[in-house]
Amino acid sequence: MEQRLLHPADSHLSVFLTLGSPDALGLDSVELFVNGKPVVSHLYSEREQEALEEGGVQQLFIGNLPNGSHYLKAVVTARSSNDRFLRRESSYRFQKRPGSLRLQMTLEAKAPEFEPHVSFLEWK
Image (cartoon, rainbow, N blue to C red; front, side, top):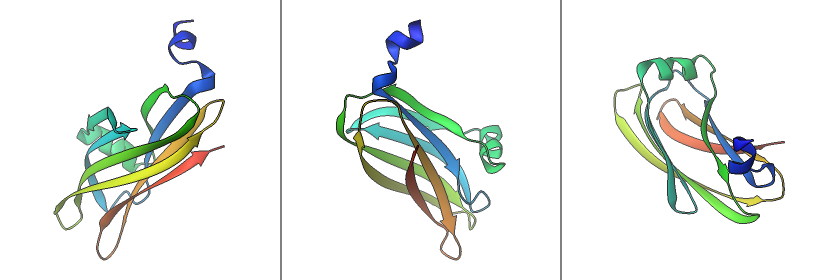
């Protein structure tokens, strides 16, 4: 009952994190902002990194949003395969409609630059 009061299904937003290229980056931290307000700041342990590298999915954020236009900003700090620390920002605009909204945030890096790239996908 507490969950239904705190997170009504009609305004529910969930953000999940996956790694698209697990061998290319060592994830250090992720910060997530919704409409400019910080909602998540997570520093990854070695065990958490390994779980994501093995195909795990992390529920990064769960909260409520009114219907309408919103945006996410993700700030990712990671170590590339050539041991450089990289910090990247990525934004995503979306339309919140009645009902639950689930977003997948995928972090990947491709050779030869190994620059991190964040993409978002709305789950149906």
